[in-house]
Length: 283
Image (cartoon, rainbow, N blue to C red; front, side, top):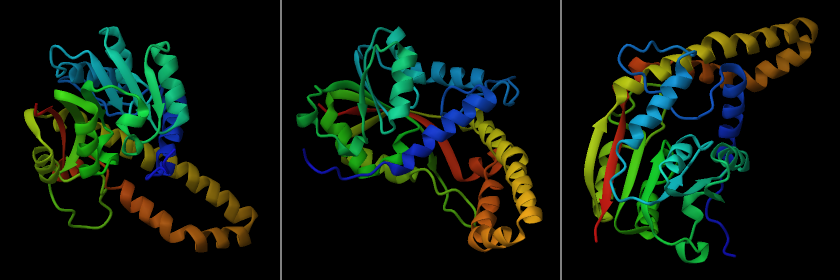
């Protein structure tokens, strides 16, 4: 077996995030919520908003699609609905825990691969070409050029790529801003260069951006205070250990405070756009 080009150590944070979200808020999925008109963005409404996100996404699957490669399947939130539509689904995620959850949620009715998309070789994997590749909040983790190269290799002629993710639309011009997301113009440029035609492009930022307010509120008003209280206990009982921790972690903590104070919907919408885009491969 050839040596793998890419490591997926960072992706294990998804495992932790899903476990924490499920235990604290009953959240089953890793993706954003889609807050439809009149739906108040609260943590209590987030699970329903995540279900609305999936329903909205499914509308963009073209007629005639039968075999789907769910690249970056998370815990199988979308795959469950794909199976209900009687589609033949293969799910890919780098975390064994997420693959386990996907099999559990789909009743074992999907094929699974535990790896990164970039590491796969179509010939060695034994996977026949797909009608559609789905990337729901996963293409941001895949390098643009390598991603389009893989899409071309794994799709049938005239096959589709359905992407739902956020992209950078403005240069980051101050400290503390999240660098996540590919530049939108570059992503579209590379799609065209690799032989993909953009069929649909829908901006759903206003419906998903409220998720960022919930995210920021949870971290700054719940998680940070808990860690602050722990540090205060350590300071009182073990002052020498506290001084050591401050010396080791002080600057990192300040950076985290700055970063997560810039995660709200207003900042997000100023620099990023959440797009649903459907591409078709040339024949």
